[in-house]
Length: 164
Image (cartoon, rainbow, N blue to C red; front, side, top):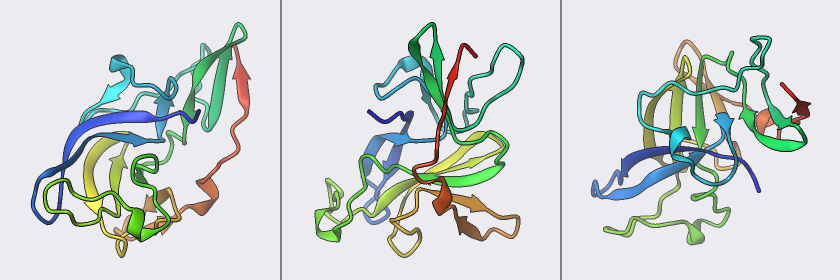
């Protein structure tokens, strides 16, 4: 199973303001696995948690193993200061006719995005298919505000680090 971090926040429909979802699944920061564990659930404006090794280093893009047991993963790189990532689990639909719809007004939802700056969750929103490319999971936000897709981060190689 893939690893995810979880954010609890009511995400409003841009059309009618009804809540589209209140749990967002994303892949950035430390994740203990697929299931939700309360101690690792984020809220807006929380700092992301990254697993730090005994020597003080924070490895990027790595699975952890301790004493032969899976011990979570650092998804992404804590040195990246400003990015956008998407909830690719709940809202990933290649066929627009299969997209989730707002439970109240019925408009199709392209997806939900999370903006992270300086390892703090800034905002979460429903985006349009014109705003973000459905085939890219991560974007760098440049100093001028433009977003740059980081296709090379999708399915990033992740080695296993033992006894960190």
